[in-house]
Length: 82
Image 1: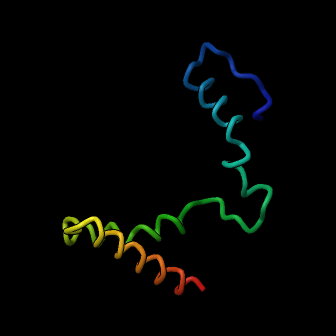
Image 2: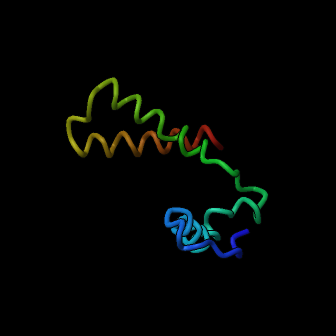
């Protein structure tokens, strides 16, 4: 399907077709590697806790505090997944 040329008259479709051809090795990885999920639900779940923390507290008081929270959250999430 990606080998089929798209008319340049349909600018948005033509542009999308070019992008898909350019990035097909990254976008379609799940087709060639069965262990790769076809969605990004894992990534979305990983940031959910951070967004909830940000929503509740409004922000981190310092950049260092945000960094420390991110490191702790990363370690915690990795332990849970293992």
